[in-house]
Image (tube, rainbow, N blue to C red; front, side, top):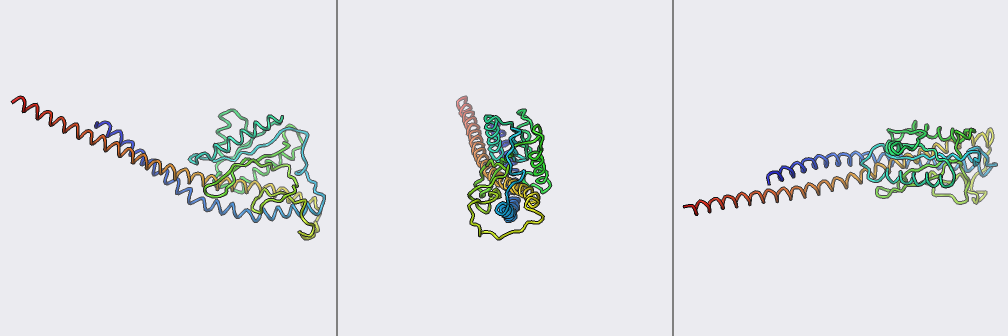
Length: 310
């Protein structure tokens, strides 16, 4: 019985240590989630302004630009998978990876050649372990993406889409990331970023993936514009910035989602650790009581044996 007590006490000590780690990670995530949510929210007005600027050019000029022209000279399609750098975030990365694998299979079934780009160590390790080629990866900033990394991702995708060589260029760019709704709900989405398209129905203002322009909008809904030097020159400056803004917002949304998922997972892990400690304490007490009962029984039995011997 004494051996069982030692085993349970060791388990209690190890579980208490894990509980402290889980609690610390929960507090760290909680301290960072506010900043991540604020950054994601702060990007919305600028994204809306860029969308309005592109829409103005589209409504008052012949909307024709290399970023809006579909490519037919290659079947290569770029996929950007945004995952976490670290674990302890529940099923956050796993859901994204499943969605990315499903998208890859879907594109292959359509006769296309997926080209994979990864943001986050979890996705990088996952695909490399399975032997999936990765064109380029960015790691180390999943929970706090910098403008430098965002610029590198944007420049790489624009370069590949505008590359005239069909062997190295891509015809489409898809982004798989997590949209932050609130602390409880986050959803994985696959959005086609390039080529940009003009659609009929505008989306909500807070969505950075809002369409470039609304074809059904009333002519007097916007002011008249004069473009200097030309609409094409304005598009050359605004559209790359528009792509950068969409990627930036997606990375910020993913960062907030990752921290929210980690905080929630660590809170659950802390509660589970406390439950294990309670169960192990109960088992240790039961083992101790059984040991005491056995000792008393041995003492009584010895006393009875002595009395019978006399």
